[in-house]
Image 1 (cartoon, rainbow, N blue to C red):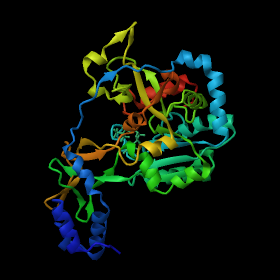
Image 2 (image 1 turned 90 degrees about the horizontal axis):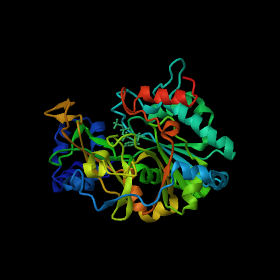
Image 3 (image 1 turned 30 degrees about the vertical axis):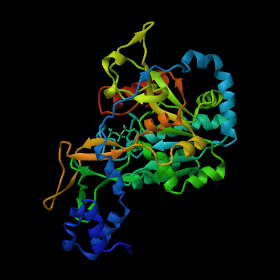
Image 4 (image 1 turned 135 degrees about the horizontal axis):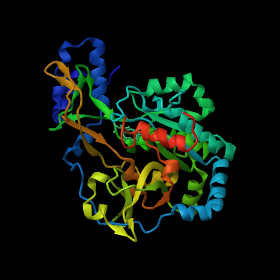
Length: 409
Ligand code: UTP
């Protein structure tokens, strides 16, 4: 039962310049009207105020990182880091969060990206490979940590079914928690919210920075509290080689007293399309490749790139600090996209950008935390992202790296 009536919805929308959302109301059935009113009631129209934000806001003063632990430094302190990390893991203070709410449009695969078959002579989904990586850690720590999997309303059912059909890849089923990412309305370039159909408002996942607020909004914050989880290892669905809840990474972040940690790799070239960890006005920040001016991109010192550490989307966040710092303050970024929508009574699917999606980004969380350990990993061993169908960061390059690491495909 909707709390909002047609008359109230009309006033509410008119005040916000969005009354066109009721354009087809008279043509709708009772059920369809209910759906539309319920969408109108639940949409956060305040997000639209971000339409005046610049797509890429000017950055503050960018300087290189002053501290990072290199592969060599990690090798020297490995035993110490690992012991601390394993201890925290065996005390049950760490959980993992898999970001699987993206649309994976660059891969061009119709289905949740994690279900993509990376195998050649056998079936090996991205999910299965990542669950194998998890097993390597749990067999060391002797404890299965909670695994939160963030999906989207589009791919949730298929993702859950895939895990069910594969018996959770041998992981205890009661340690896996799915939740659906929160959404934001989409709109045209003038801020008019799109209709996805005559009775549904067009909504899209609110970006990968939505992982923590969505987790809390879904009610799963109670698991964090109940189990005394102090650290969350957030990772992307793309990278088939990454270590999840890596004890060495956990130990290093804890021992250096950082509020978060980021696994980084040395860039292969100045042009590599990867965000770079740096300082912005003295705080850790990630500068995306498309924002980077040439004088920073090509700057070198002692033969290496000054801004040479690329992020791999594998972060460790302290839960207490997340609660203190975030408080709903993550900025929204405008992403120009081709968005299917209703136009003159027809649903159109444009091939070019026609409006905005509003996205929060995990990289902004790093900046808000105020301190971040850059933890370097060997890319050949830990970085094989599946972003594209072919070329760089593709299925082919990921397969090659998996083989090099002894994975039978
Ligand atoms: P990407 O930035 O690569 O986006 O996501 P994407 O949607 O998966 O792929 P493209 O750009 O359409 O090709 C990085 C990670 O963040 C997750 C993705 O699932 C991936 O693990 N993500 C992204 C979300 O969980 N939610 C989002 O809204 C966006």
